[in-house]
Image 1 (tube, rainbow, N blue to C red):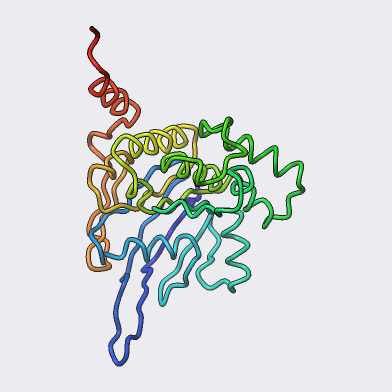
Image 2 (cartoon, rainbow, N blue to C red; image 1 turned 120 degrees about the vertical axis):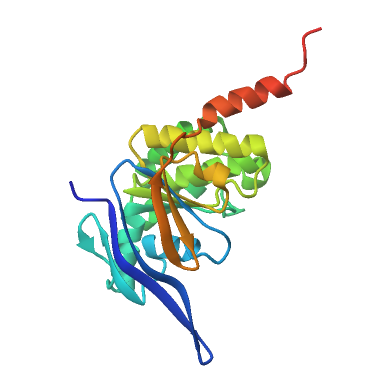
Length: 249
């Protein structure tokens, strides 16, 4: 079976004055359809650079990158934008919602870029918001939503085009522990439904909610291993709420 993602000696370097900085060096790995993979490493390890390359937001300096068997590493910017809009959904630490658009209108944005008509856009965006538990928030503005709800809208926006994979860069970094667990539980639910998920994080606890951890250090891949004891965010969320519940009189 053809992997969703395959890289070979993927590298990214930058010229700063007379010095060359290697943000990523010789990364080779693959991701199968339906996998949940955490890309982990400290600040400066190259994990965000790798995410930008996987999401076609940047081009590699060297190496090759295949999506569903198609070498996209040297595609033109327009070709990459087309592939990116059709096959990749993004979730960032900040939800990046447009303040003057409702939740429904924010989720519709990828469909507008894809040329989907208004009635179909509204239907699909509504279904995506329902899938993340926000069917009752369609007409709300971002400032009327909690941080966790804003991130759920961002996830609905990422999945509305039914992408090949969802790339999530520190998606719980700006949330408190309960809201973070609720987002991780949602990601695990989406993964159980067959969606391919790549979770970029510096947090070992967050990474253990994936099924596999790829570790980077100084731009190099240093390990790629399955998670021995994968955490269940829904169970953790239930235990958290039980601990916080007031005792019966």
